[in-house]
Amino acid sequence: MSTKPPSGTRDFLPDDIRRREHVIGVVRDVYERYGFEPLETPAFENIETLLGKYGEEGNKLIFKILKRGEHEASGEADLALRYDLTVPLARVVAQYQSELPRFFKRYQIQPVWRADRPARGRFREFYQCDLDTIGTTSPLVEAEQMTAVAEILTRLGFADFVIRINHRAILTLLLAKATLPAAQHGDALVALDKIDKIGRDGVAKEMADRGISDAGSSALLNWIGSGARPDWLDWLERELDAAEHPAFLNLRQILDVARNTAAGERLRFDPSLARGLSYYTGAIMEIAVPDLAGSLGGGGRYDNLVGMFLGRDLPACGFSLGLERLIVVMMERGMFPASVVRGGLDVMVTIWNHDTRDASLALATDLRKAGLRVELYPEADKIGKQFKYASARHVPFVAILGDDERARGEVAIKNLHSGEQTAVSRADAAAFVKSRLDG
Image 1 (cartoon, rainbow, N blue to C red):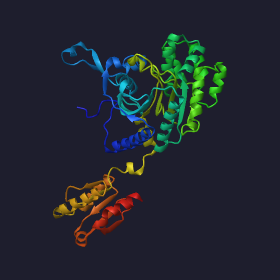
Image 2: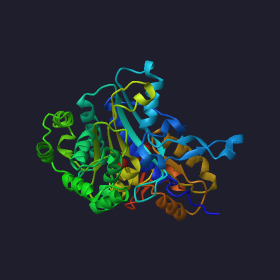
Image 3: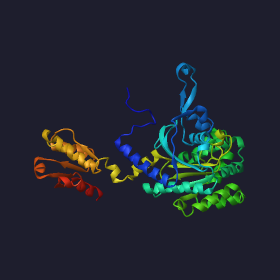
């Protein structure tokens, strides 16, 4: 029997958890300082809640849950694992509309599931870190969300990211300019959304496979160019003769209010940005870093989604960070702080012999009361063996209560990185370790 977890999923060992908690801690702190409140929803939803919200491609990636009990033999599904956190949010807003504030700002950090093909940084079970604002069409919403995300990435140590921005209505103009029939717009956007993963040639091939003419796909790919440039908005607006078009006006408002924020210098208008989910209605955004096929996160405005549940449209906009991709890139670049890399312990207390167990336990208790993270070695092994274990656990300091130390009321503290060993009074042991950790 294989002991590997299912393809596209992972087990998280202690070092993995520490890295995740570090990133989540930064994300949660920034989200809350921007006024977003926490929300959690069930891991699975009624299947009709999810179907039809993500387009044909998304529907294929939903993990369906078969009916249970006497209905199992039917092979039908009535539930499904959530595909993202946005559709469940729309359901919540419709369900609790009378209890929510006029402008509902929420963040949600939970796993989602997609029956996708696993790849580097892409899994079937993964966490999303979402923030959304419901109830206003103000361009301040997009600007604030992009600023929060830029602050998170900067605090995590990213210096080379850009925030690509486009508008779904501008894409519609481009599709019409390329003379693609309206019935093929959805297929074209699904293919275009993959341009950073499979390139222009790959997009052209996928469009051909979807029945889009070579002339149409070539025209579209020529219009969007090959990447993000700050001057393209002016150029495209002139070429499309769309100076007063609401989409261009909206993008200019967003760019204007975001100009002097942490996101301002990162923003790049990119007409190739599509965001394949079908519920987007306005501005769309995505984070790009060099050498990563795909993005670290993205989002956009979806003013019609809540209306599918509520019966009337309600403006909404959101942004989602992909926790797994953040961690993959940070690990590859060595971006985690030393305190996260070294492990979760500050000091290990040794056992000198069988008769000193109580003294070692008392020392460990006092060190913990002082706020240190302490492991007590459980057996009276040779001291070298205990040091070897501490080193394997990445513990920076080892506390030794030998016969001489106990007779003098002292503790020997060994720094496993430098090899230096210092005798300190029993009462000062915690303060000594703390001072060296801070240094």
